[in-house]
Length: 416
Length: 95
Image (cartoon, rainbow over all chains, first blue to last red; front, side, top):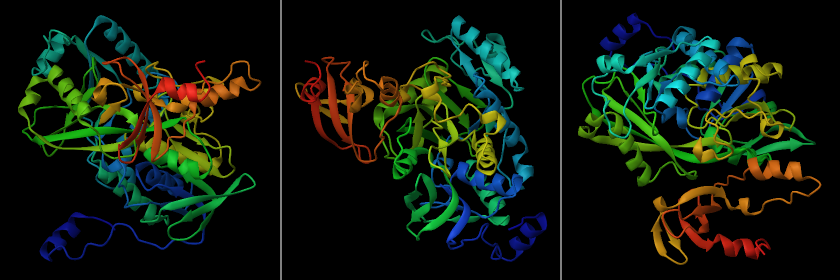
């Protein structure tokens, strides 16, 4: 499916009856070189980069539900590369650079808007920590900018600078951060992969992983067995369930993260703003709704809904930095399942089973990583060596003691 | 969620702190031959089941007891609440 101004014009005159599906709906073939389990953002971008950058097109993406029905369809759409540790920051900066060229690359409008992200600072110690993180970002080629209180008072006069408990002292900007139309990312990657010959198979649930003598030979699905030279798990919140089919236990717990949208308002927020003393982040969508969220609920769950204490906590965080949010009515809220890892950082690695690969542990930060995750996973699948920016994201890092713990919380997934 | 505390009756889950899988009761023996491997598995690997899950909750805003709660991770339904002390004793710990 190709788009042009001429096509929009002629379709407009003919009742929009000539649009065709953006991707095919093929039946599964009995065998592929690579089978990707999970047709979400990361699975589709993996297929796209496998086909485009590594020339591998005998690939199938298996999706249990409909395409993009997982976390790519239910996140708060923020992109950023403001991490600190050397195992993370080059990877996320690589992802940011891919975002910056993504629309041209897959020729699809993903409404990528680099409207900036601002992490607010509430104490002297936090200012030191954030400036240190800004310097770490420079080392990886990212941008960072410290804004003092006077500058923020000019730019964002609605913030509660004189809050008695959490006064706002400044903030760390990443001007290249921003938001993306999340569904369009899935659709753009799907179209790009499909047009290069990748089979995207929806409503095809993987029910078993075939392992013979320590080597993975394929998968059992609700639409019959499919043999594959390589099988790539890429199922985020369901990682534990799929890995269990291969007899694996993972350093991951599944938790629920809630997100919220207010009624549509006139433009009030120029970019993404995050609270530094609690957990709260907010941006404004192009339709005008305030999109915001906070902490995960904190207990193991596979139910895509949360509970009220966290709703209250998120609302309190919002009121603490911008009291005007109290005048907006909540339109809707939802929950998604997060694959919370033991150090808050992800995995892109081989498993101990031959031909079986794992991508997961994205916690609540998988959306921004979508392009780099797919690119690095494709690199691993094609070359059997990690991409240079993903060499630390190994499954055995806890055993070796090389954890990537941005917050220094230890092996407690609900604290990351 | 409401947790039916064995001594205090139904309490709001917000009064509790969640730790994780109740297998954390089964701390490995540090003198074991494979202690390093066992502590790695104990500290980092989880079953993470979809369905019935036994987990540790700490009643911080109440009597500060540790509970083992059996809860369904697909529905949030709680089917059993025990004192962690009793569970640990039944497993031969905490002599």
